[in-house]
Image: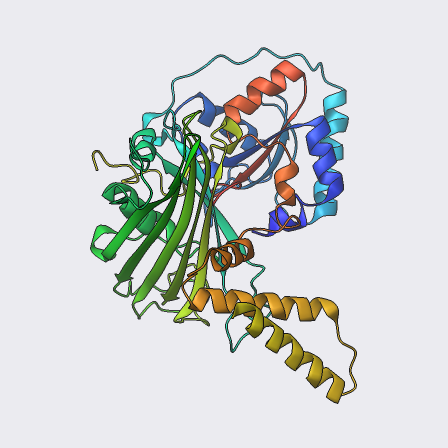
Length: 329
Length: 104
């Protein structure tokens, strides 16, 4: 995603946003149509900006907006050019400095239930990074291993608890909850490295499993190793990319080996480490994941690491809406 | 084994460069050695903890790639609005079709 590298990694932008703004990152696919106070606020801001009134070619409101907390637009732009963004920020600050900065603190509101992406209480967050793996016949430069993408895996409190035995003993082996394994396979072993792809459906999941083995245990901590696999394959969608004209006329699949390690503090009842890697072979393409020139089979890696479950880290998983969580295990 | 493969790859590049009287770019050698290690660990299904760590490190963003996270983003517009009012600051909204801090 170009903006992360070109705009938001620039020291000047980092400083100005950190010191002089309240920076917010928003998935406007939802907020631009949400029927609640948050959606109304976003639309109010966006309709004063660069895409005001836009309906074609899409109704998107993507971009960068500076605004007052009452919704008055200060400046907006949609670009990945850092100098243009800096200019926009300075223009916004000029306007802001002429305003009365006091504003009523907004009250809470009832969220649009359809778009409710609230974080489950007590859940774990694993931040996922995905990237192509170098090959013997192609260097990292050739396959552009600098391209990568992120997602977040949410593990409900009860699922996390099921990963830690009540009376752990070294050598003990058991299976992870099936529902958690399904979620990892269908929603997190998806190739978004170069562009977005749809999730795998139930019928695509041919096999998956995750075995846990207690490696060591003492009064303070238990260390557990993870060893698993997943195989997913989908029939060709038959869709055509409207820009490249590429037709999806071959199967796509993912064959993954999973390894990991968990360290759990028995004194504080907290996960201290949860590292997991899925090393996979992927093949085929989707309409928008830009694999038409690299259909594979080719290696891809997915790495998961535990991050604190605090609000700033609660960006929802890409496929949270729908059947991300299902009842029972 | 992994180290031997990486060393062999680096030596072969060095030998080729020597034969052609070229300057050896140390960063290129380092990159080749790292990639060889990752390929070996990947192909052997990360059998050892060292191989697991090698692949994990390769996939995770390096500090330069994660620099944009230094900005104290909030992923919630309403929460940002509350903070802006409390701290008497303007808001900056990075809006995308997809989560800018996640998969997009």
